[in-house]
Image 1 (cartoon, rainbow, N blue to C red):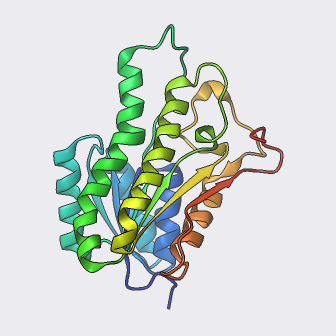
Image 2 (image 1 turned 120 degrees about the vertical axis):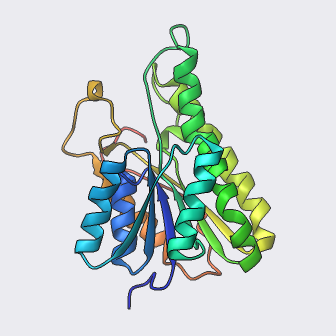
Length: 239
């Protein structure tokens, strides 16, 4: 029996990168996984791979920045899989621009996806978690939310610093209800999320590394809460 046997996990940004890796890891540990992303074809590939490996996965197409779509997706997944035990907020976007040159739309898109969507998805699953007095929310942040980033990453860095505050406050709000919140802050990771202009580097972390960290958090005994976890490859420049 897997460590997550009998549990339902919903993962946003599950069509590729970290979200897909986390979904596969959780399914491999026995969870029934709900997959949320905007692109149906990506979700079908991930769901198919999980099913082929013997797991259970249900896709739900949604833009996580839109309340109505989030509520509909979570309702669909609840009906298909059962009440949500674990939510992983993995959806994220980044663009590079200085404050002087920043288009308002770029700023809004990053805050909507990296911060607002976390709030919307949490709101969608929390009534059940609070009623059942159990649940875990894992937010995927970034080392950029802990260590000042370089020029051009202003909106992304600001959104990840905001996610730190959101996660800490949410954790305090939910403690009386026995619902845990964990913020994972990975360093530079080689996923499709990275803009092409950054190039690639063989020593970056892989999506599977983040998935292992998320699985570690999800398989802790329920009385134990890991509040925040920051990690990167040894030679990463985060310090």
